[in-house]
Length: 132
Image 1 (tube, rainbow, N blue to C red):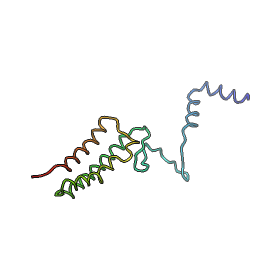
Image 2: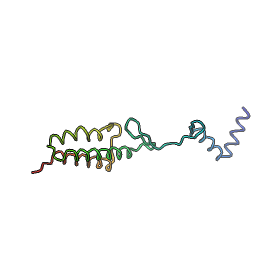
Image 3: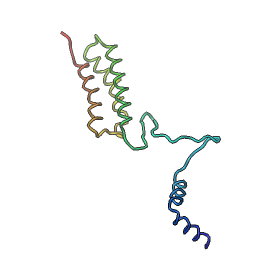
Image 4: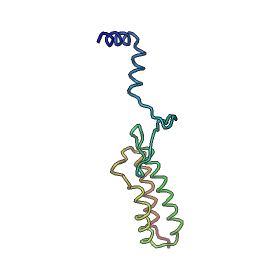
């Protein structure tokens, strides 16, 4: 018991050493066969990007980029299609990309909402625009 008291008195007098020991105990580093595994900032799990800072910007950007790609592909394939076919293609091909996991990563920032709305507006314009 005396040793523990002396040890803590020594550590409290050397505050930097105390903080270093506490942080090294709290922060874990993982290794695999002697190789240190680096800490990641984000990971993709079941199609949803989870970030260590709990922001959804990466997920929104990923969904918007994927939806734009799907929309442009749909527009390229169905140039001369009728309105019902275009609308059905949008509802089955583009919209599920935007809505997948939206209950989890519900966008609340104006920039994220407007990016998602731009895709929806372009798809609606494509689906319901008729040429004379």
